[in-house]
Image 1 (tube, rainbow, N blue to C red):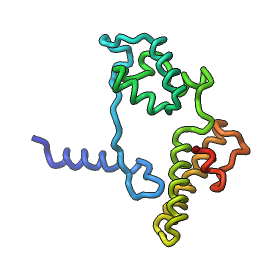
Image 2 (image 1 turned 60 degrees about the horizontal axis):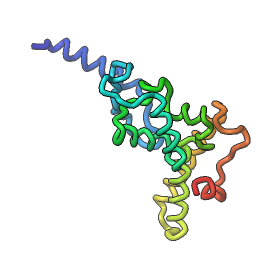
Image 3 (image 1 turned 90 degrees about the vertical axis):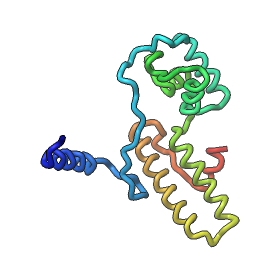
Image 4 (image 1 turned 60 degrees about the vertical axis):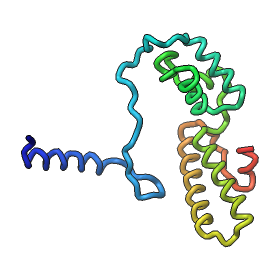
Length: 172
């Protein structure tokens, strides 16, 4: 049986832990849900594929036009590879960059641009949709913020700029 003071101190600790969690950009949520990786970081005993076989599979899937996260899902579901980093020692994106197969635009930025293009296409047909206009503004502000971050990390060139007129060419 827990004492009342222990319950209260535990609750206050948890509450203070939650107060430092960064909120979402355009929603009120402060969700802390996430997947938990296994504690052991060595290769599982049941793993049959070697590091080189996995790298070859990654190259093959990348040449088909799949993104690093899609490659990870296929490796997990079809090939039984829980964590690529545990077996190869490097992440999927770094393996692709070393081979020169990574995309020019980071995956998260690509999907935001794709979403903005879809909203613009919707707005061409439905000009009075005020909510979509507002959501487009929010998505584009996320694109600008992410692009600014990637420029500081030299992932994007310093002269890269998001323009709605040429955005559909980026995601085509």
